[in-house]
Image (spheres, rainbow, N blue to C red):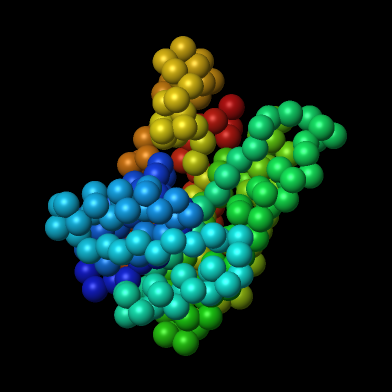
Amino acid sequence: MTFENAGALVTGAGSGLGRAIACRLAKDGAKVVVSDIDEGGGAATVDAITAVGGNASFIQADVSDVESVESLIVGSVEYLGGIDLAVNNAGIAHTPGDLHELPIAEWDAVMGVDLRGTFLCMRGELAHMVGAGHGKIVNMASNAGTKNAPGMPAYTAAKHGVVGLTKNAALQYARRNIQVNAVGPGTILTEGIVAFGADQQEEWAGLIPVGRMGTPEEVAAAVAYLLSDEAGFVTGHTLLIDGGLMWD
């Protein structure tokens, strides 16, 4: 796959899946806007890309804030010359527990970043893509967007919402040469998972039918496929990357 001369925006790219996705797109030739609320993490991702000859720039943004997202879109178009590819990856989770004990502030925070943030970014990206006459978007859902994540009511609801937004936009914009898909990762070996230690990692890996956790690079490869011309007949789809956990 190659993305030569393509401009790509990746949110939540300061660490984890977002960083892996940004690095993969840059490796395949895209010019990348790395966006995150964390300036240090975003700068580190840009450094990782430019150190191997890639092209990237950091734009700080809070995806839950309208004005911040509007500035992100304007800045991205200015740097990239146009947004051809967009990956709406920014997201947060919350402390597991029963719904009746979930603090309203945590519900609002997860909905604000995971669902509202995806909507706001799509709104800006699609407005640009309609004018340009083409574009491809991949939203970060989760296998929790198609099944239940026990003890995670806000996260489950938000990711189901992301899947719904993806389907709706895919059909709305299909005849305008714009594809909208999503990926649904399961348990992926990111920095957050590593922090739990080897014993917890082994326990989680044992729950997955293939017997291991996924890697950020495997998620990035799936995103790259959905953004490529090879997936030109794919839209409205949520590609699960969870080692069979959905079907267990």
